[in-house]
Amino acid sequence: MISISVLFLSGCIANLSKGELQKNFYYMENQYCQVIIDSQKASMTDKKAVSGAKKAKSNIDQKVNKLKTNASNRKLNTLIIHYGETTEKALQSYIDEIHGKKSYANAPYKSGQLAATIANTYFNGRHASKLAEVEKISNSDNKKTSHKSHKKAQETNSSSEDSISDSSQSDSDTSESSIPADYSNALKQANYYCNVQNMSEKSIHDQLVSDAGGKFSEDAAKYALDHLNANWNENALKKAKSYQQDMAMSENDIREQLTSSAGEKFTAEQADYAVQHLHDN
Image (cartoon, rainbow, N blue to C red; front, top):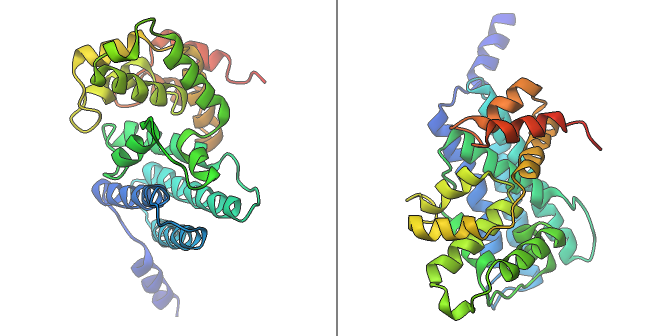
């Protein structure tokens, strides 16, 4: 009887490779992104939006349950499970707001933070294919929002939006028409990475010029970084607190993650500041 139970349980346990985990992560990310993309359609109604979000939530939940049986790559696996569960809450927040309710207000922000952490730490900054389309929506000057929660999912909160807007307006005395479009777009993306995802200067640069990222020129990336109103110490601190709260990492692990070339790419001084202020209120 015991041997049969052991055989049954062993048959339920998966051993997923890093590549397979990456596919699961991209699948979840694309599910969430598709809801945001669909919300921009002129034909989108509240009923259709709720139906699409519920379907995406269910699809992500199935992947999360599958990952909970995985016995390999435990650290990455746990992080992707946490991302999936947080993204389900973000989708529920979207549904509830359409119905005039409030729930999981911070879930979209945490979902974006976790996605950035996973992509930057394990997949060389590469995200799911649909994220680029969502970023175009987020950075569009003429964006039209069908639902308030979509705006929250893109920009996470009003303070981030104000920070981005203020930075964009104050960082250049030159008229907008005289700035090359690529430079302006690079700055918009850099503001998003800086103020919403709390990325380091090096990570933002690499994301802007990467063939898997913004594909901007070095000159456009330099312009964007030169015109950012950034506090890199505070970005490092926000990342550190995310690692502490979401992954229960030790201070030494947090410092290594912050400075790692395969991680967040902050300077040693910025990482030291973050760890020193980790327990501040």
